[in-house]
Length: 117
Image (cartoon, rainbow, N blue to C red; front, side):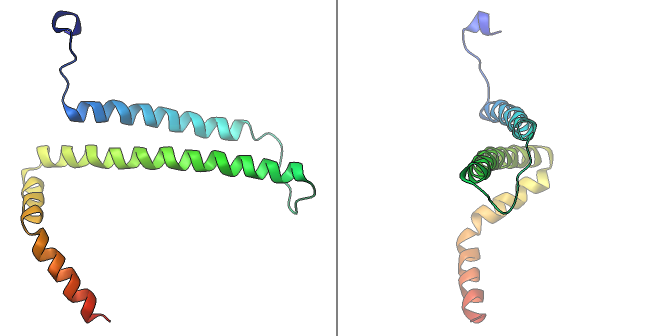
């Protein structure tokens, strides 16, 4: 179809699906690479600067893994909400109700927050 129209003609949620699959694959690959490369044991207490550098590199790699995984979870949540709103009409009605009543919900939150103090 791409060669005929010269465009992908995809919906917005299809792009999210593509990004989610890419992030899942990269997150899983990064996880395996982190723990395959940890062939030497970490020792406590730290005896020299090299031991500290190993811990710092491990912490940096885990921070990157956490960020990629968090982006994946957020995009998967958006994707799941789209599926729920299209597949379950009652779920779509719930979101419409919340969207229309957001000011009232904000006022309710403020009042209950003030009552708890």
